[in-house]
Length: 370
Ligand SMILES: [Zn+2]
Ligand SMILES: [Zn+2]
Image 1: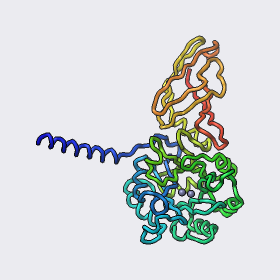
Image 2: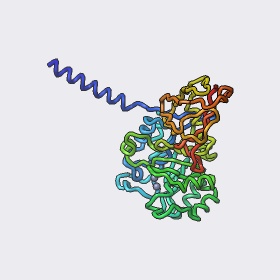
Image 3: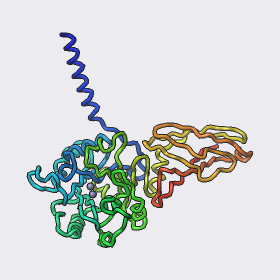
Image 4: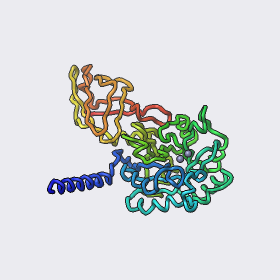
């Protein structure tokens, strides 16, 4: 009897532990930069209101658990495989269902839709729409003009998607048309598990906002087991819809996928410098000596450093990984008498997993007082 009771007790305990751990949020450790909050966002995902597998509130819970600040549910306007199971077609419904929970959980929910056409122009996400039902138009340009009328921020989804651009990733005259009309503002350089180098070039040459989104259809944990989803880092003055919209218009974004950041140098540099702390206050290096410099990385990203050029008076490692949430040391070796007279020791690296709009790795200088 007592055995049974203890079994029941431990079973209940097991359930309660499970339910507690299922409700926790993991914060993403990527620092704010001077003047802006770094918001972790995913602006492309689906629910049962198009071809996704989940109910809209699940997207909010997933985002909250994974430490995201803002999401957009962007169900297809033109592709609704579950329509027979829906009482009526209402493209605003997913947002309406998810919004109260998003407000409670502090996740900024941005209304959105995916305008889903064959190439050209392919698939386009319209964010900040005020009435998604009005995007249901015969002509794709009419749908785009309607999005613009509603003040939407529009970006081109998965431009290199093999189903639509099998041989090469092309920019079509229709995209030029959309941009000239002030409709097309951004482009996904990364979607689901795919990076599009061409899109990065266009983001730079055509001044489009970089986006990096999951386009998730399944539950998120099934889509990215053991790793984080791709996300768009948005540098906003505050965590609000208005500030996010302004940041997207001003191209204040960086793509974050796997262990990689891609974006403008003006954002990558402060992200890197805000993540690391040189713990060693003074090196005190002289010729023929070996001194250790301690560096801590408080972010979630492992930084892969490669030497750009040697320094004068001392040598330092060609390559080093500043691991996430770890402190590592670098060995500096004095190679000439000159080093003793140097006030500061400069180490010239590039971060190979932080890529600028040119595609090149981010150059960084580490400096320590001698
Ligand atoms: Zn799509
Ligand atoms: Zn999609």
